[in-house]
Length: 516
Image (cartoon, rainbow, N blue to C red; front, side, top):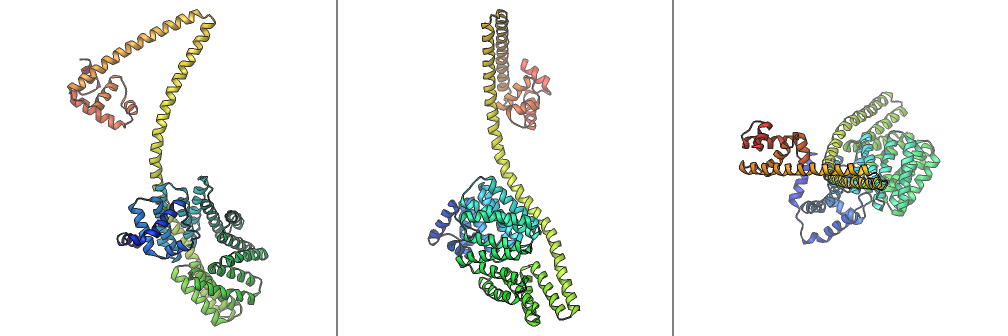
């Protein structure tokens, strides 16, 4: 993570925008405002930017210099996506976390959901299912609570549902997985997204396969392949061929499966995606294991294990050693079979331990993100509190006016009914109250005059004079603090200064000073 930060600093200093950058930069900033930077399914223009680290660095630099938090969130999401493609997951997490921080600063629900979804994608690839589920769930909540029904927000909801479905699949809760996958597909069909429909059908097909419903699984995988053919997505077709080949293997149509696995590997190699190259090689190794082609099977499986070790895909390594164990058993080499089986189990245990450790680390990251979100929300709450106090004051004034009106109406009704005695008593009471008010006003005027004189004479500040007035009214430090919206410590500080300037030691002496 530290290396990523150092590299980021170098980008900031290295790239300076010039006239040659104006065209694509203007296009990116325009897309930022219209939310047409699709990180989930990038178009040709965005794909070219994602491949160009120089342009991404310039976009981030200009966004920073103009304090455009919305554009910065997009920029970091793009950098994260670039690292995801390279399987540099640690750097990707760092960039997506930064994207979320700027989404909070811009208070943009879509950008919050986007960065949370993408962190979910990364942790899901790292098999950290609990952490990934946390991010996907928060992304779904942010999107749904926004009540925004634009296409880009619906896409975010679809991605969240797809991610949650994938995690429940990892946790082997297939009914829940199927529920979320189907919800995701509904949104993708509503959006008319070919890629979304291809992925949705693929996911549902995978669940039916895990449930042992191979015919239903095949139907959905064929639909997925149709959408991928329509898009001419080599990457998607590689996945579909592997899925359909797996179904044929499970149906014992081994030779038919091989005819699907081979083109799947060719497509995966063309795409350059390590994860699907590994999967294709393991599938071909599986086919040769079932055919008992020892040397060929051994080569494909070991190639897959080597790539999996390079990118840290322990699940694939575990599967590879399990296949080697099966291959050794077929050759009646039980010692090797046992050793490979132990290696497979060791990686299985390692995955469990790593998940636990990763979950603790990720909780720390989540806490850090939550803390920053709370800081921003705290500022918003302070502003809201001030507004509420003003509203409360206005309500109090209105209530007093209404109370007076009610009293007048009641008095009028009683007068109309001939309650002369009550009128007389009320009249006397009003006179008495007026006398008290007049007396109190005169006393207040005298007090204010005396305090002002005393303040001028002893060089008291305007705030200290106000505090002395409230002290004279018999109010406590806490009451005064609440009255003028400051802390009790501040009131104590003012009183200490008053004592020093009046040359007194306590309230009694200060009050006597006023009377003098």
